[in-house]
Each structure stands twice: as C-alpha cells, then as structure tokens.
Length: 557
Image (cartoon, rainbow, N blue to C red; front, side, top):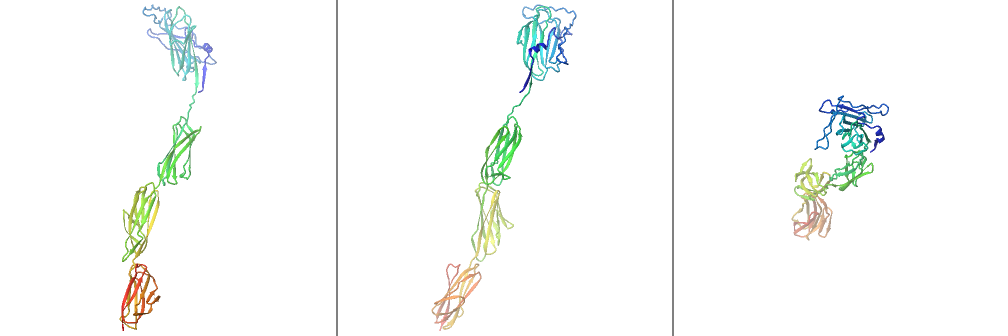
C-alpha cells in the first residue's frame, strides 16, 4: 500500500486557523420566536483566485434581534442544585463556520461549525457547540480541534473531555473520521465578569491517498480418473482435472503424462500434454484421453501439472484393469461309420468354452452343413439358415462351457468334413473341425463249382472259383489257394498262379470293389475213382479269418 499524507504543521494551522467565536468570523441570529432557537448555519465560502485569502472570514459584530435588549438576570440557583442550568440572556443564537482548505465546502476537506449564545449573563453557565464534518469520500486521520478561550471564560465541563486544557487552549483529538461523518463537542462554561468573550477554534488533520494491491496466491491441483475395468477391445477413458484452489489466476498451466507401457492414445502415442493459458481462482478444467491397451492386465495412470511461478501438482495413480474373453471350440464326430445296406446319420458335437477373465457377450456358434450331406436336426435351439446351423448363446461367463450338437445325413459313402466357428464381443474367433469316414461293409462270397460231375477216371474236370463282393465297401488283397486230393492230378489253371505239389496258389487280387466279382479256374485229371473233394481257401484284408469252401466230385471207373 502506498500512502501519501499531507500533514498540516501547527505553525501553518495557527496562521490559517479557523477562528470561531465572538470577534472571529461569525454569524449570529436571534430567534424569531420565543420558544425555539434557529440553528441554521451559514458557511463562510472563500474562492481562491491567487493563493490563500486573507482573512478567510468576515469580521462583523453579532446582530441583535432587539436593538435595546436588557440583560436577563438569572435567579440564584436553588439550594438543591449546586450547578445552575445555563441561562439564555435573550435566546439569541449565533454560529460561525469555515471550510478548509479552500473556504468552499464544495472543494474543501473539512468543515468546522460553532454554535453559541450571543448574550450571556456574567457568572451564569452557558453552552456552546463545536461540530466537525468530513466533507470528503475518504478517511481523515488524526483530526484535532483547538478552541482558544480568553481569561474571561471558565470551563465547567466538555463532552468529550478535552485531551488537553492549558493556557486558555482546549484541544480534542478526534482520531479518524470516515467519509461524510461528523463529530460534535459540547462545551459548558461561564464568564466571571462582564465584557466580551472572543474564542477562536482551529482544526488540523491528516489526509491519506491510499491505494490497495491485492496479494494473491494461486495453487494448482491435479486429479486423474480412469475407467476402472474395461475389455481389451474397448477404449480406456483417462480424465485429467486441473483446478486452481488458490486466490489468484495461474498462468501457463501444463498437464503432462507418459502413459505406462502397453497403453497408447488413439494416435499411438504415449505422451499426453494439455495447456491452459490462464486458470482463474476456483476454476477447473477437464481433459480427456481415450487410451487403448495392447494386452490384458492392470495399468496405473498418474500425471503432473506445472504453472508459472514454480507451481507444481501431481495426481495419485489410478488403476484400470483390462480383461478379455478367450473362446475355444472343439468339434467332435465319429471317426468312421460303417454303412451296410444304407448310409446312417452322422452326429456332430460342438463344445465352446470361455477361458478368459471376462464374459463373452453376444456369443454365436456357427457350423456349416458339410458338403455331401443334408441337415437333419440340431440341439439347444440351433437352426439351419442358408446351409449354416447357428446357435445364439448370449453371454458366456468367464470359465463357462456350453455344448450343442447337430445331425446330418450323408448322401453317400465317403469323407465328411465338419467345421464350426465361435465368435463373441471382444473375443477372437475360434474354429475347429473333424472328419468322418462313412465306410461301407465288404461282404465277400466264395463259390466253387465243378463243371461236370461224375467224371470217368482218366478224364479232366474243371473247377470254377468265383469271388463276389456283395457288400458296400471294397475288399483288398483277395488271395485264393486250392488243394487237391490224391485222386486228382493238376492239369492247368487260369491267370497267374503257382503250383507246389498238390497246392495251387493264385496271385492276390488287389481290390475287389463292392458288387464286383472275380473268377478263377483249375483243371484236374481223375486218376482214380472215389468221392473226391476239391478244397479252396480265401483270405482278404477285411476278413479276420479264412473262408474255406469245398466241392465234391464223383470219380468212377
């Protein structure tokens, strides 16, 4: 605070005193009636053309309301009252005033007024009044009023009491006076003898020119808030709030943060920076960053703020947990199905599990109907639409498992490839599949027939061996072995074969498809009569043991 003070020196006050009283610049009036006193105050106003006027007031004797007033004699006070009441000689009142320092109340700082009786009786107490008024809109400090009274005046009392009273000078220290305020001094006294009382008042004060500088102190505070839990596929909202809790504006506020490893902004950056040119007292600003996590886990986010004047603030770390559903699928089907006279239905089972740490919302399982088959039915509300069986599972909790199945009808024997796929919100799609071999059943028939019967000894007979696959699947490695008894002698055989003694072995037939047949022939010579047996043994890849067949022929002589 810078204050300029103008102090009036006592010497200047003496020379420029506002003199109030009889013989000083005065205005007096007599009451126009006998019941009241006219307290109108005339203000002496002096224009300053060149310097301070001399004098500031006009000296003139008080006017008399009655040109020949007779002094009023006051009766002696009653014995019970030791201090007589003031007595007005003729009810005449006078007043004087002066405005300081210009003499004009419109341009001055302080006004002093004095109200007094114009005539009093010797020895009788009387009252007069000093009134001081601050004419300005500022405080006036150290206001002091002096009243210089002659020897022909005896002070009885004053309100307030004078701060000093010596050598005919009464002084009151009125202290500070607020704008447009007034203070009044009541004085009671008496004149011991006849004559004139000339009392002069003066005033001094200090005026201050003040200015006010508001001292403020900004104080910044930073807080951070994050989404407490989020799925990996969703953004993480990071909200920074910087506040000025101080009493003045904070300038060049900067919020900085380096996101933890694994978190980035939408632009792929880890550095976050916001600036505020000016943050008023009590003002807060919010800044929001949408971050993305690279993997599941727990991340801690904090931040720091700075401002001009060395202001700093830091935010306590807030944690966000990033979760993700993880779906697995397992498709199971029979590895092979044997189809005999007809092709049976093929059941396919699908099992889905959420191995993640968050629920999978809007979980859907889809399984295309395998090529070469037709849809038969599905469990658990599965429906075929456009060649795809679909199950809407809804939310699949972490750790939960669901199973479902569907059945297809193969059109023919062969391989069936079954596949299924599961998807969920924020979960990676998972697929699996299986293959079904729809196999036929081989059924090989072995037939042995002699072409002639009976046979005369010495003649030949041919045996026809027929192998027929009556089943629905191929058979492989068809092996035929023939055995002769002593009554027969090998002559010839069809196809590739080997003869070892009385055993004829044909080369294996690699594949004998369903409904196919193969024929072998062996010719022998009857060498002696009897009931002869021609034996045949068959082995195939699908047979677990040999098939034996014999044909009887009668050799005679």
